[in-house]
Image (cartoon, rainbow, N blue to C red; front, top):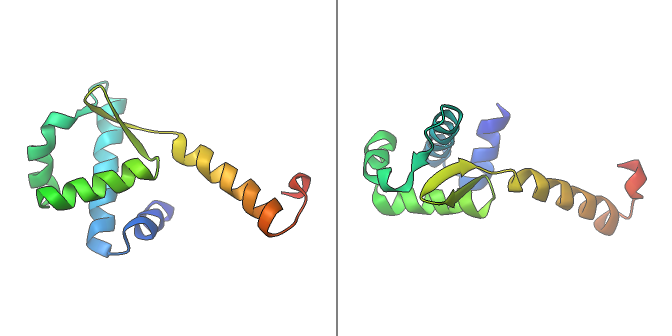
Length: 105
């Protein structure tokens, strides 16, 4: 499961990876349903994810930092920044580090 593998790269621990994936699924479901997950719902998220407040915010901050979600206007939404950053890093790695031509990527 690529989604789970991504979460393991971000969080290392299986339990945290599962919580991160569940949180992202909640964000996605609510966003697609037209009722984005609100930041003020944090208390119910602690219960749903079975996590402490500090662990929740550490997980959330890692997802924000990775560009997988945004927190604007008091709402969590999925973000395309992660995808754009991956493309930029892939081009950089391919050309600057490996010394290949961009056209061969």
